[in-house]
Length: 257
Image (cartoon, rainbow, N blue to C red):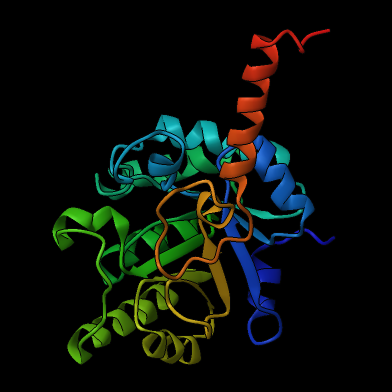
């Protein structure tokens, strides 16, 4: 398998659709990498999926750096993208650059941050410093309090035009790809056609150049998942059954022998 880089991701647009996912530890990162996942996102979605929070907002740089380092040690061919957690880049560009550098030093190949035109100055600084940026527009989980919940964006034409403008702005600023989250499929298709960079959809329909799925959702580890998710396994049942068998065998004297 080839090593995925900014150049190979860019070259995939219009040629090969990419199925990408999150991972937060070395064990699952190794399995995703061996399966050929091209981009592994060490997402701030770890807040809900591994740390027990209700949103991504409490995730901090220490959480991100530890998870990024673990994933990077295990992934040999996938591009590893480290999510910049809430507060790590809203604090001013100088501090944001230091935090992005720390994520790269932890082993990431690129960083991801949320925002459109408002973060373009930072995207330019990061890319000028040699740090590849994967942008994120549409529904932005770090803005959940501003939305009043996790709500689809771009539903009116006025709102759609803002998402389009943000997507074009981050491309112009130097992002090599952009996440389109929870927007109408027609809008995602329009943006994908308008941009030269790769669009990575999550809840944004089938036309995007690539797709994200949260690992815990697609593997059936979460009880509740968004409506757009397809479960490719039911690991919760398997793991629960294994734990129960272990407990029973110890109780009944069958293990160890």
